[in-house]
View 1 (cartoon, helix red, strand yellow):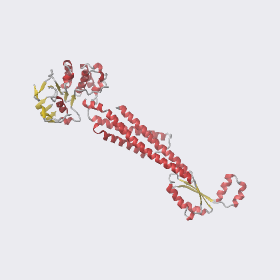
View 2: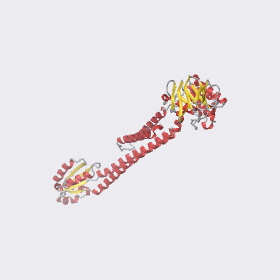
View 3: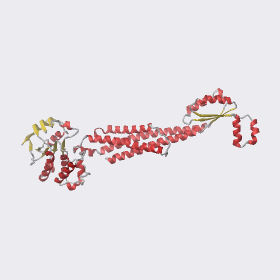
View 4: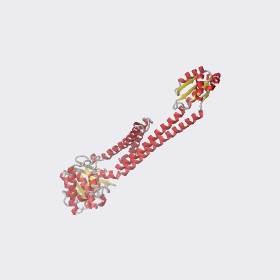
Length: 205
Length: 260
């Protein structure tokens, strides 16, 4: 699914986030934890195809991220929210879907129930707390079944209880072959693979 | 976003309607002024009817002459007697040698300054120097001046409306596209297909191109069919209106650049 080789981020002659070689299979939950300013966000953006000034290679299903430039197969859930604040929960979830099947409708309802959003489906986003907004972004990502779901600083908006709910939501996509790569400041439980940044190098624990 | 397109369509409809009203108003007023010129006859008197006949032959070839009628002196006398009830003066009138009359009516559209000069040149030639010409040149000049002013206003109005249509359409298009940038940013980051915005832009462009023009043109032809108006607009003008909308849409696409 995801193969990264000889990867390094370069900034003012400094190389960091060094990855010799990693290969993540589909359907896996991967957690990468590191301190602030270690390059976690840039790594995710590099995988997503939004940042290209890096060394080495990234391959998603044996294709570089630029291959998916027009039709993204990765979804990045960033620190800040990307939602239409004056629109309803439902409108925001179905926003990227061109056609919604009845199966998808049912699945969205089920996922909203996990996130305790099923009674707020018609509520405008600006009336909801931040964690609910992130759940909406997560459901929206999961329902599209992308190759990779990238979540930046996941522990910023999901505490222990909400993290379990978020992972339960992600199961739907994971069972369909998607992978989840979440970064955090601290190690998170319930992940299949955990990595950390040690001396600017990514180490699989 | 849909409201934005609807608003743009309404604005274009208003501008196109104004433009078509300008065409209709111009054609109507032009017809009136040209009719005034057509209804202004030229009378030429001469005692020598053969001279009038030879002049008629010469003038018949001119495109701006609509009709020439020559009335012999006897007919003129008859008309005067019956027209003014001069039966008692019949004997007196017959004793006078009345001139023959040539009545020339013009095609108001074609009878312009060069044509009038051409006619005056013919009439002032030595052959016809003895003819007595009666024509209200002042009234002709007033009507010609009005026509020239009308044409200037019409062309000025066309340019103004063309510029207004192009600029307003470009401005509104850019305004609403930039306003929708936030929506598309969220759409893209949510995983939405990046081609959708371009498709939407093309779809909206097609709406802006065809909906207002078809509606306004359809209304014009409906009004013609039901005889609310009977003024023919040159169909090429609808092409100019269509071209103006196309140009404004292409220019707004260029100005928007990578925003789309």
